[in-house]
Length: 236
Ligand code: GTP
Image (tube, rainbow, N blue to C red; front, side):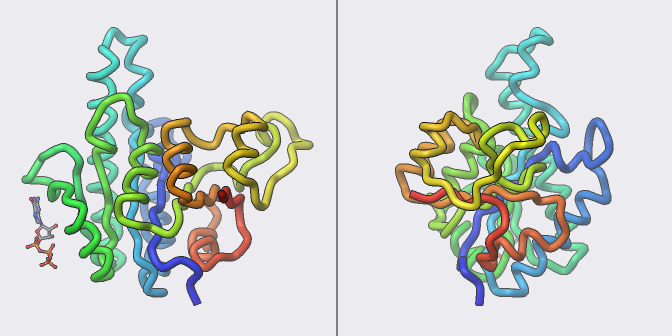
């Protein structure tokens, strides 16, 4: 029996690169699609926010003479490219999808209308939210927190390269201790970084739990959605 009825999955754009240094790894794209499909088969309602860091990072633009806001919009467009790729990959696996965009581009994706997006997930379609929040100065983590709240997802599942939240960086400190559960206020008091503050406080204020887990490990996503104790749960 699934623990969560409706989930919002934040997929990092960067991990879509796989072993490459830029762009989309066909192997990772397929892995994402194959990881998502079993959730739909379990009748869990799935919505996704995908990042764009494998193609373009907004902040990086400041060094290149591109204005911050322009860079952010370029980053939003990158998430649309990833969204199109993910939609195709999911459809190849036989999963029904709808690609939604926060910036109007009717030829490519349908505009974001909250009630329509909710109907899509109710009908068992995987809804991919692209173009972030549609506004500069927000990350895709913030888009994930916003959409999770808007569509009434039970949880925000944040797929990353690490298998949870540690008391220090596990990639730098081999003795770092992992938390199975941690409260929002503890994350703040310990100064831990799991997402930007805008995204984090949006979840905290609306009592939306976050699960941080390793998306690259086969079968992890389904286990997390079924409520197995994998990764770290952030709760109120
Ligand atoms: P319901 O009929 O309400 O269950 O939803 P539906 O999505 O099946 O119906 P709709 O006629 O809205 O969409 C049919 C197809 O067209 C779907 O693949 C949508 O994603 C797509 N679609 C709908 N609106 C747009 C749009 O503005 N732009 C693009 N590119 N596709 C759209």
